[in-house]
Length: 186
Image (cartoon, rainbow, N blue to C red):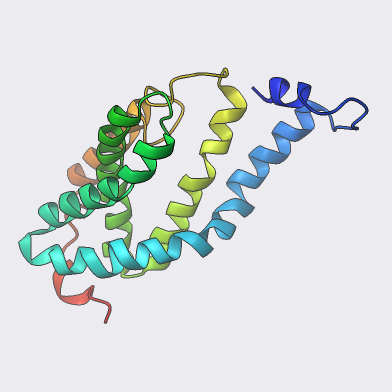
């Protein structure tokens, strides 16, 4: 895909070698980008994990995590329906894929928030996730169906998130003990 994008540049434009562009993108995505993205993700995490999740905790930790994740996923529905967002080939199916992906990712971010009592950890992790779609673009063929794979919120991303969640449950890290009393941010 990068080769195709670079081929569209005006003639005579001096471009760095493709390998250099890919290496710089990879380095940025795993080092600097999560910290830059925290500017945007902190607001979301203060809302979803810092405000909504603690208010849902009286329903039980699992219900709170599932409901807040579903609301977070549904919140993306307008941009998915209008612009395709992460799933341009399937705007309607993309809403469902996004909701399930947000429930799974939201569960992991909720675990981080409840375990640390800090929205900063969840915001940094969210920022890292937001920097990863650019990596997928580097390695996918143009027109690849992102609902199936390539993105953490797509079907292929569900598998590692589900396995990690299962490990958290198996290792008794989730549900987080004593999370209800100490997490509400006023």
